[in-house]
Amino acid sequence: MLRRVVAGLLVLVMLGSAVMPAMASPEVTRTHVKLILRENSRTSTVVEVNGVLISLKSNENLTKANLEIKDLKTGEKYAFKYKVSENNGKYTVEVYSKGKIVNKYDSKYNPLDSNVTKNLLSENSKKIAKNGLLSYSYWWDGVKFVRGYGVKYPHPDYEYYQIEAWETAYIGGNQLIHYHISDAASQVIAQLAPAAAGAAIGAYVGGVVGAVAGAVLGVILSGSTSYVLLDEKGSIWFWYAKKWGWTIVPVPPYIQHLPMYFRIAAYTLWDSLGTGNP
Image 1 (cartoon, rainbow, N blue to C red):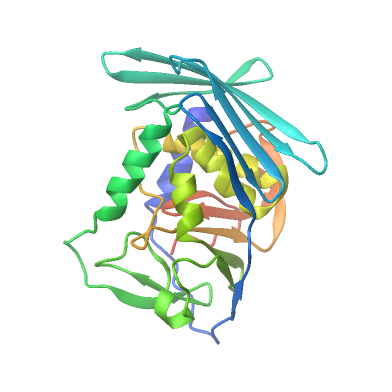
Image 2: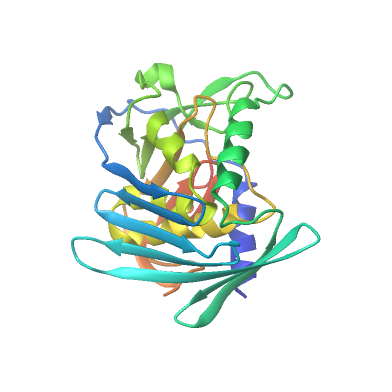
């Protein structure tokens, strides 16, 4: 059942976008996010994002690991265990919570290996499609977007909003917050193992709830359908709804009070608003 839910989330990525009528362009809010990479070795990754501590501890041969996501202010935490087996260059990954398996999938690479994310995203960030339509702009959620040639995935127009790659900033749309992670912070995230990278992005939303939402992406990224997070400027964009509500996610406790829309780069994790994809 869980694998079907994840598959359903991936299908959302392929659905057509709903273009909304152009409205007065919202303002850009520049902000600062505290991201500290405390440790990043072959077997240990510890990163703090706005008071959320994400720790991934693996054994020497990267076949077992514990992922803990903790709110340093409240003490609230979630814990996941990973078991990875390899056969002829292919990996089977099992994810556990509270002693029960919550997901099992096959992967082309080991999601506990930090070099995987770094190499995958670094290579993908250099690749820009040469086929298809020329780049063009359009309005979605009341925000001016670009897509097409030279654009890795649809996102707000850098030039129109005068956002620099090195800035952390967000735009308030009709229903969503359109969030840009600075290129420096994005590169730090790109160094993390997939299991920790998704959690680090989700932590930007705030608290453990956001981190767990990012952990959903960490699961998807570790599959054979992995795709780029970094855009053409080496930054990461993500979107979440202004409105929160109870929604189903494929990680414990499965039903949580979260933003009713959540998308990171080319992945829509859920869409309870029926907003669609940009």
